[in-house]
Image 1 (tube, helix red, strand yellow):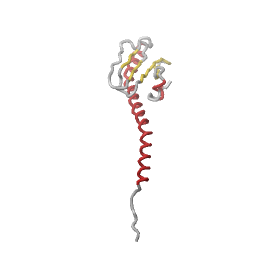
Image 2: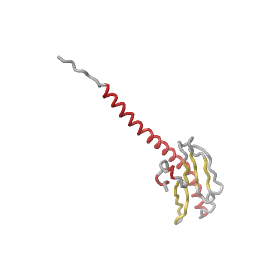
Image 3: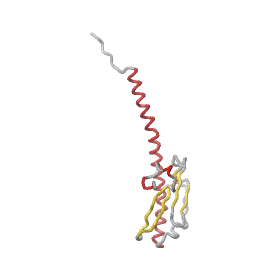
Length: 138
């Protein structure tokens, strides 16, 4: 009787290792981009605290003229810096240490029919569009 061999040949194992290496080389940069996007989303959420303060002051005064007066951005969490303009525009920045890349998010208020409407942007920096939420890519 002939004995049957069980197992894989060396060539088959090398092919499997090569396929896994190619998949890892493609997946790792994509994964890093997704982790940065998640951190930038946290940055936008942290900036929402300033949006609330600006909205409350705009409702009380009926105008955005001085809605941001007295508000300062405190570097905490993912926020590494930023400012609030007197007109209520909020700009927060995350840097390589806190986010994984240099990203700036600008939240601009406007009043329409008694409601404060917020627009999100990157302040003209198109290089960071792949990291910010889709509503901020303009």
